[in-house]
Amino acid sequence: DKINRILKRLGHATVDALPPPEPAVPRPGLAEVTAPPLLNTTVLLVLATFAHMMTFYFFIKWIPKVVVDMGFPPAEAGGVLVWANVGGAIGSLVISLLTTKVGVRALTMGAMVCGAAAIAAFGQNITDLKTLSLVAAIASFFTNGAIAGLYAVIAQSYPARLRAGATGLVIGVGRAGAATGPVAAGLLFAAGWGLSPVAITLAGGTLLAAVALAFVRYRENSLA
Image (cartoon, rainbow, N blue to C red; front, side, top):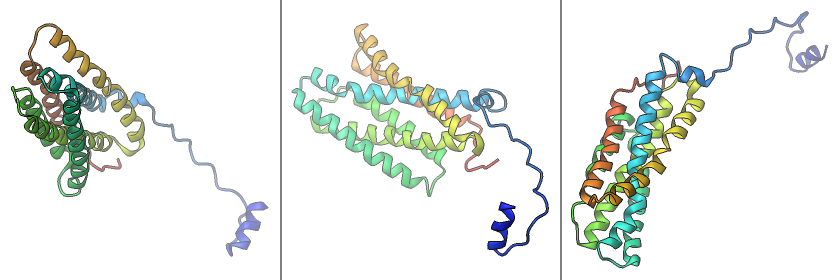
């Protein structure tokens, strides 16, 4: 009766009976994300996120210490970190804008390769503060920009009904690399490694992330 009164006010015909209820649709669970056919996608994306975060946070967290160890005052070391953060902010914005023109996965992989090269270059006995600041800004431009692209790749690699949960799972597990990178660098330095081999080794994390993305079964904007 209540429904018919509303239908009359809306100018529609009344009904004699309610339609049968629709069958219940099971809510998507994370079990689907970690089982075939999505298991490979999830493993590769977790690996890519972990490896890239490891490289990025090694670089950002160790910049002040590295520059001070080169003989520069702490205030000047802080300036290099400022430029790195400026480069990262610009990189995130530029990469985000470029995704409207270029495929986001290819763009992210390219940024990762360039970022890894710049981080490796940062460790190659640069003694000029301006050059250090420039290289730090370039490295952060690409690596932080790649993070923005990586998040988009993760979201677009899953069906719409699983997208939110899968993105949270991949990023949540993968971000353990943010803690691993600085610790791994500290262990290598403590073992007697110099800046150059440490930078090259940990820059390899971002290269590994780019390789992992190349093997992801990519859906890009699929609503399936």
